[in-house]
Amino acid sequence: VYARPVSAHKLLIIIPAFNEQGRVGNVIADVKNTLPDADVLVIDDGSADQTAAEAIEAGAIAVSLPVNSGYGVALQTGYKFAARHDYEIVGQIDADGQHKAEYLLTMLKALQEQKADVIIGSRFLERDGHYQPSLARALGIGLFARIASLITHQHVSDPTSGFQLMRIEVARFFCTDVYPTDYPDADILILLHRTGYRVFEVPVQMRPSPGQSMHTGASSPYYVYKMMLSILVTLLRPGAKDTP
Amino acid sequence: MIGASLERLNYLFATVLSHLDLASARSTATLKHELEELSDLPETKIRIIAIIGSLALLGFIVELVRRRRLKEEYSVLWVTTAVVLLALALSGGLLEILTHAIGAISQASTLFFFGIIFVVFLLLHFSVRVSKLERRMTAMIQEMALQNERNGPAAPESNGRSPEAEETVPPVDDRPASRSGSPPPA
Image 1: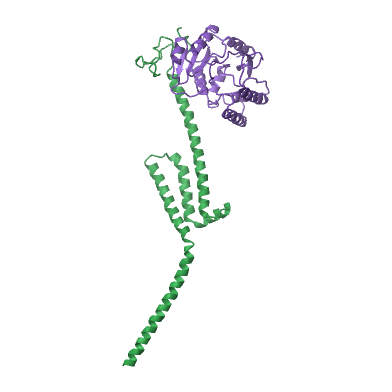
Image 2: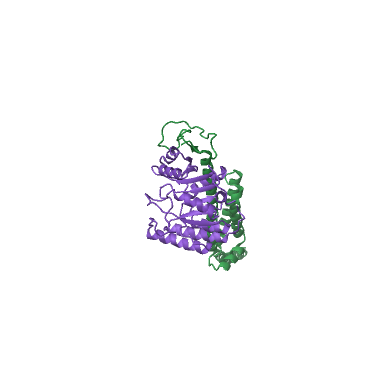
């Protein structure tokens, strides 16, 4: 099952975008240059600008949420799209151009060679990254990376990364109510681990962020609270791979 | 004759006097009794108001359900509350026992205590409902979006969704046959 080669048009790259006019086109071009055979889906999360039009212009498929619903809802919409259209591998990349699409190749390779279900592009796996988070944010990410590492018995360095690649089984799993649409983050790694999916990290380098990210800061008190609670209830729920 | 009538008058007077005396004695007793009852009076008043109030609440809930303004499903919590209130109002002993049990001094504070507990539960219930609604709404938003996917210049862009795009393009069913998996024409 895992050695299956990725045939053309079986790879979907999801780009959740909220008011990313002027940036999302470049990201699509970047992805299409790297993976000419991949379909690109932009989920326009109720943008007020021309994000969707720009995405279509750049050759992507666009899906527009009628109201702004947040990063998690947008992502899940992408997973639903992938599940319905029978893609085999689903990737996700931020619309602001922080992630370099070239790493999708490394991640794709890792997904197939490591017999993994999910590959996460980590900004911290190699300490030479350009990514310099604020102190509070670094503390937040560090804390949850530590917690996630402890629970999954596996080194997790970047639980907040939005740069991921997964098998369709995982995307289908994410289409259900198990997916925390408000703040998908470290709790997802723990959920995946408890469900029996294999998650691996691959080092990636980032471009400096041009603006504020779609990910609400890992430093906000609500984020810390929500993630703690989410991790706790994930652990309290029956685990095992019975849901997918 | 005169003596007899005098005697008669005297008797009458005495009778009146004794009557008066009796009357005053009786009124003192009633007054005493009433004074004793007076201490209970506020409780009685409260009880009457409580009975009327809980009956009115119960009637109002039933009426709301009858007019389909309140779903039966949601009425459960309310009807329970109204019935409990009614039971408390009808039997003074129950409230007394409860008051004693929670260590309250006044029965009114017992009522308030349970009233607040009820309100807290009701709010929690609503939060649960809102969460459920939100989840369903999210699914609907996603469904709407997925039903309306657009790709490539083949489909006329911006079917009037964003206010900026005032190109007066009429809404077109832009779901061409080239859906699944096909690469959008660049």
